[in-house]
Every structure is written in structure tokens, then in C-alpha cells.
Amino acid sequence: DVKVTQSSRYLVKRTGEKVFLECVQDMDHENMFWYRQDPGLGLRLIYFSYDVKMKEKGDIPEGYSVSREKKERFSLILESASTNQTSMYLCASYWLDTQYFGPGTRLTVL
Amino acid sequence: EDQVTQSPEALRLQEGESSSLNCSYTVSGLRGLFWYRQDPGKGPEFLFTLYSAGEEKEKERLKATLTKKESFLHITAPKPEDSATYLCAVQASGATNKLIFGTGTLLAVQP
Image (cartoon, rainbow over all chains, first blue to last red; front, side, top):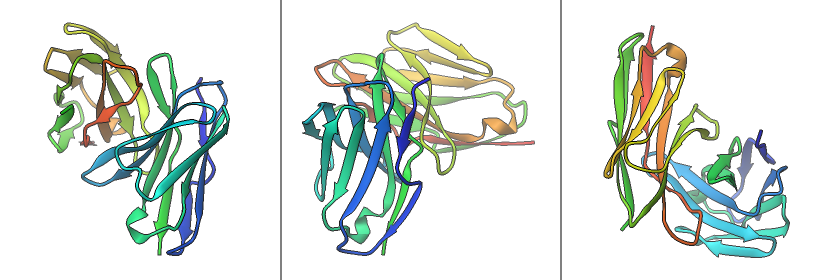
């Protein structure tokens, strides 16, 4: 079974804080993805990574950065959190033509 | 532009009342169409992948079908535990493994 874990289920941060969201997969997959999910907008791709230290912008990268120093770990960074980044964040790992998702992190920025 | 549209946005069924969810898509070369189930507050759970028109996949009370323009998720004799949001996504032919998602259909099955 593919297992994708995310560091927190719920997170509350203040405006201007630096926020780290971590995602770990245990299957040595090369491709990993970060999405945010908002009501009425569906899942939107923020960044993805082909391999260690390889990254590419998705559809809504503004205000975010990513880090992939090890193959199993893909981090999403909010350099200075803002209230419009309150959302559900989902990480996915790609294996055999399919993306498998983690449980999600519900981030609230006050 | 590649696009996925799901309908209806929400569907309420009585237990045992069969129905279908629709996913229509426009994409420059379909590499695969995916169905996911998502429970409230959780990540999407993979259900099916369809690759070519005419293909069908089944799992318990769910059956997914694919044509050149759309996919249907048929739910036969649903139970309350089938209540969830069902997401459709497409992967276009090309060098990346990105998915384009629809906004989902919220299914409620009442006992």
C-alpha cells in the first residue's frame, strides 16, 4: 500500500509567520505534488517535484516555495503567511500512473 | 484550455436508489481519467483509472465508464456509507504527470 503522511492535520498560524508543511512518502517515488483545496474551486496545483532538488511551478505558486532535499520528503513553505492562504493543503505522491494523497493539513491563518 | 466539469454539484439519494455522476472533459490528448472519493476533512482516496473510450471499471457498488468526451460514475443501490464527495481528474498527454481536477459532486445517501 502506498502511504503518504503529512506533518499536521490542523495548524493555526498568525499573519506574517513562516509556515512549513511537510509531506513524506515511503515508496521511493520520484514525483510529488502540493495542492490546495478550497470550496467551489477544487484542487489547484501549487508546486510539484520530479526528483530531489527538482521542482516546477504549478498553477498558483505565488506566496509559496518548496524544498525537496531527500526523495521521500517534500516540504511546502509559506514565507509570510496571509489570511488568503487559509485552506486545506494536500500532498500527493505519484506511482504507476496514479497520484496517491495524504490526509491533508487544514491551515488557518489569523 | 484543458478543463474538467462535474455534474451535478450535489446529489441526494435514498438508500437503494441508483444514479450516475457525470464528468465531462476537454483535453489535448487524454492519457488517463481518474475517479477519487473524498470524505469530509480527509485526503482523496483513489478509486479508478480509465485510459480509453469504452473502458469500464467496477468496485463494489461503483462502476466507471469512459467515452471520448465524458465519464460516468454509476452507483448501484447506494448505502449511507457511500456518502462522500466524488472527484474526477484528467491527465493530458505530455511530459508531466499533472492532474486537472473537477470541483466534485457531493453525494448524500439517506437511509
